[in-house]
Figure 1 (cartoon, rainbow, N blue to C red):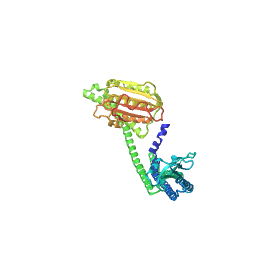
Figure 2 (cartoon, one colour):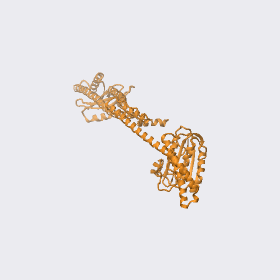
Figure 3 (cartoon, helix red, strand yellow):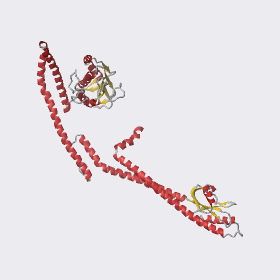
Figure 4 (cartoon, rainbow, N blue to C red):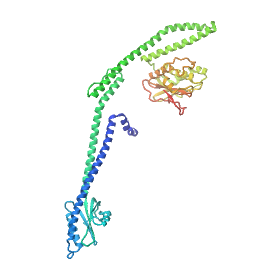
Length: 519
């Protein structure tokens, strides 16, 4: 079941046009949405972060300027630089509790002035090294850490230097939290993702509905074609809808009319042909009987004739036998063409039937110097028309003897739960790919110039194929030039069933590689 489930989408892709349209549309839509979403999120992120950075730098610059002004006006006779810087830092920190909130850190030679709970690692070393270059204003992202158990949060550090008159530089750091901006970005991302999902679902549903609307006339045409194939030649499509749909229905109806007319013509010609073959075959019976009686009289008295006349009487008797066989085959073919062939079913052991037929042609095989090897290790019962099965097996055996080049012929009988197979394998002239395409055609012979010792009408394999189909079975041929041929008759064990798998392979087990001719 896991293998079936694994390949279910592949089968659905191959069988369903709406599925392919929806999947392709989804793929293209996902690619466009991903590119568009990335662009929107990138621009939103840049805008929000840059806005926060600009506001923070402006805020820090204003506070820093105020601190520098206060520092410049300090009377060093009444207070020290460290005390003044500490007071200015506290004032800036108080100011940072409102509006664009921030923390202030000032480094002095004596100590570092910082808010309680703020971890000094919140100030990156990179910005501290940049401040040694002199005057300026620097900013960089950071992660604000706390020592009092509070969670870290993203932030921005803006740094500069305070310069008292005639004194060394005092680094000042303004740490702004960007948690609110990050939350805004998260909301924007969630909104973008949700919008993309809703858009994909809506687009998929819309594309599916549109594809179903487009496919309706196509499916209607398919159903009409199936009805025509089933023989309902009077069915027509309704001419409704848009111009394209109406044109499709009109074309299908015109095709159905032309098809019905052609089929009627062909049926008429077929009936004429069948009637002609049947009538000629029946009409020839009477003169053939008369000719046979006369031929038998001549053949019985040929010893009284001169050698040339005696030989003529023998040839006449042989050709009369062949002519009668041809008439019998033509009558059988006419029954198949007219659909009048019927089965007389009995449950028989096909292994025994094949054994009897092998025994029947044993004398003929001996005249050709051919060994017949029967391989039927078990009984294989099936519901068949014994007369027709005997005819098929006899035809396959005589063909194998005729074309087997005096090499051994193997006959195999095998069965499974549903079917029985009879295989005749020779090692004679074989079949080419061209021969395989024609081997079951009527009146076809592999080599017209080849002298035939067994006569034959050219209808044996055609009749054998029709007999096999009448049983719901099949007859297959395999061959290679100069390597022989194999014919496999496969029949269902129960009448009315269809053959799904043959108990004997179409290709002989004693062959390897090469180019096969299969029919």
